[in-house]
Image 1 (cartoon, helix red, strand yellow):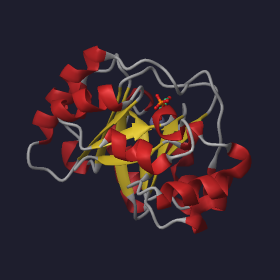
Image 2 (image 1 turned 180 degrees about the vertical axis):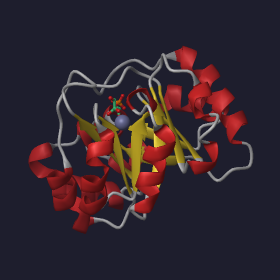
Image 3 (image 1 turned 90 degrees about the vertical axis):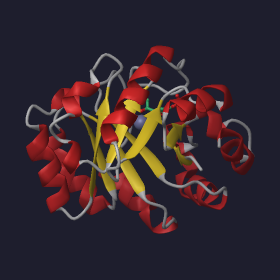
Image 4 (image 1 turned 90 degrees about the horizontal axis):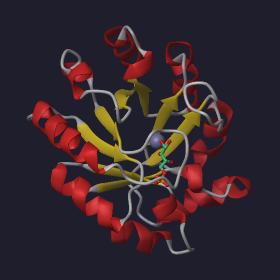
Length: 211
Ligand code: DX5
Ligand code: ZN
C-alpha cells in the first residue's frame, strides 16, 4: 500500500507538538518537514531547532526536505536535530555524489528532490547512493498549489530507473485523492500531502482517503 507523509507546512504552527501527535495517531507513515530559506524558494519556514523540539513526540521517521541554496552547509544541523532522511535538491548540489556521501556519513538516509523542470537524468549516476527520490509535482515554495500532470511521465521514468533498488519513490505537491490515484498508477510509493491532510479535523480519514 502507498505510504503517506504529511507535510507539516499546512499544520497549525502554534500547536505543532499536538499536530505531530495527531498525525502519528492518524497512521501517517513519515513526517515531511519542508525547510525553506527564502532564497532557493520564495518562502521561509523553519530550521533545525523546530525539528528538534518536536522530535520527542513521535517515533515516525522524519524526512527533512531542504529547499535551501546551501544544503551542504546545513546537513549536519538537520541530522543532529533528528532527521532520519535528508532530501536535498539536485539543482543546488553541483557535487551531488559527495553530498549524498556526506549525508550517509552522518548515519542517516539520503534523498534527492527534483523540481518540475529538472530531468530525471541527473539521478542516473547516483542511483546506488539513494534511499529516496522526491519528484516535485509543483514548483516548491508553497502548499495548496495545483498538481502538474506533466510530471506523471517523470514519475514513470524514475520508477523504471529505480528497477529493483531499495529506493522510495515519493511525490510531493498538489496531492489530493484524485491526483493521488494518478501518482500511484505512475509508480509512486509514497505521497507527501499538506493541505489534503490538514483540511478539516479528521486527519485519519484524510490519510485513508489518499491511500
Ligand atoms: C512544496 C512543499 C510541499 C507542500 C505540499 O513546496 O515541498 O511539501 O507542502 O503541500 P500541498 O500538499 O498542499 O501541495
Ligand atoms: Zn516538501
